[in-house]
Length: 321
Length: 247
Ligand SMILES: Cc1cc2nc3c(=O)[nH]c(=O)nc-3n(C[C@H](O)[C@H](O)[C@H](O)COP(=O)(O)OP(=O)(O)OC[C@H]3O[C@@H](n4cnc5c(N)ncnc54)[C@H](O)[C@@H]3O)c2cc1C
Ligand SMILES: Nc1ncnc2c1ncn2[C@@H]1O[C@H](COP(=O)(O)O)[C@@H](O)[C@H]1O
Image (tube, rainbow over the protein chains, first blue to last red):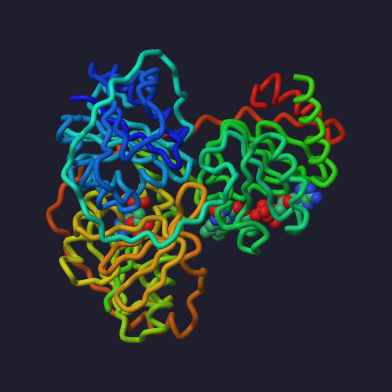
């Protein structure tokens, strides 16, 4: 009755959040006194047995045939069969785009209770209780799962991956072929950019930057820090920045280690998307800006003067190391 | 063509988040309820836009909730939509709600079912997928654009670091987010018209719930901001490097 971990990959890369999930799964298996096993769909350019270092002893691979991995109906059918074949008692996903597409479907199919957006290992002292984010990061709920099979989708950046050593045995899992009714017409990826949801550092700008032509100072800092870029809603609405950079209650919710907010007032709807960040730095010329109340570090000052100086200081720091 | 739009009520985005009864219940006293923004701005408005192009389209709204949801359902009707249905029961968990909507929608009654990307209170992002599975329909999640040509839907959706365009034959379930439509405000004609539009109250069907909330918790308060003088940005960088160990 293993814990089965969905290993998410794209373009020959295992997603960072999947390493977190593997460690989470290993921790959960230890709690339950069972083994942690991975499952990966499709082929992968490298040998995956090294993923054993996160504490998984076996990885099931489904590489036969063609799977339309954009079709949640196909993946659900495949994974429900995998859960049955492996006898898994818990199935784990990352609460990312893939997880949001499949975990709920699988939950309905297997009649397996789902906790989405989990942030910690379950408490099994009285049942099976998982802590999750609610109210867009403003609170947590402890959710009890009553079904025999359980599904958890873990928020990215909420569990530290831990290397414990070891290798995983690779086993091919043979499942019945599934056809798809969904046709992929095209995909567009912003090349070279760090995806916001995976970024450890995010530099974000608001209306205080006055116009798209002023984004250079922010992009320079982001580049120096190896950070992804984000923005407030009015900035995306005014088309100063692309829509996918919009964070907040109605945009993307992110939880980087470091969030640097430049010229953003810190409205409650903005905070809802970023308040899970581990450390928040606010740069705003108004000392009364609400964002300072949610910040760890702050500078009261004009972004146009302060930000280039920070970039310089980061450069200096880097050349000294 | 029949479209079903799922509508949920959530506390106003600025509402104070607090709990009562030993932290087992959301303290809803004095809270202003709104239509979940993802349901209103995106799913509902897109359905209305489709109907504006093709008046033969019928839009039904559904919510699983007690009578306190009536004002937000009326507001949704004022924006557009032909008829609303409220399944008169408090939502137990995502699966329970999805099962109610699935039982109502039945097989083949709707060509298109819209949900929001997530509710901003429970943040489940679950009901659309569960509904699709219960109805055995394709599910396109996190849509950012939705076009219809005959019975073929062309949907742009978010993928990690970009977008993908998919095509699928109706019927299907789509969860909507920013991009699908632009926010609207109801006009006087809509508000007057909504008064006479039918809002039918139905009883719940028997369904299971698979999870339950044991308790809520608020995150620990922040220690307070450490301010660095504007003329010493290198001090900020030093703190981030030596104290926070982030860069
Ligand atoms: C239902 C709902 C949902 C919403 N969802 C979101 C959401 O998801 N995300 C979101 O961001 N917003 C959202 N909003 C909007 C939100 O309420 C705020 O209006 C918005 O976040 C403000 O954006 P801003 O901070 O960039 O602009 P402003 O509020 O205009 O703030 C600009 C800030 O820049 C500062 N500034 C000006 N010049 C300088 C300078 N030279 N140097 C440094 N600082 C400077 C100012 O002091 C000010 O604090 C939502 C609103 C509603 C009603
Ligand atoms: N009680 C409800 N009644 C009708 N639809 C709902 C209800 N709760 C959620 N939904 C729909 O399901 C979407 C996703 O909700 P959730 O899975 O709770 O995040 C929402 O945006 C709504 O469109």
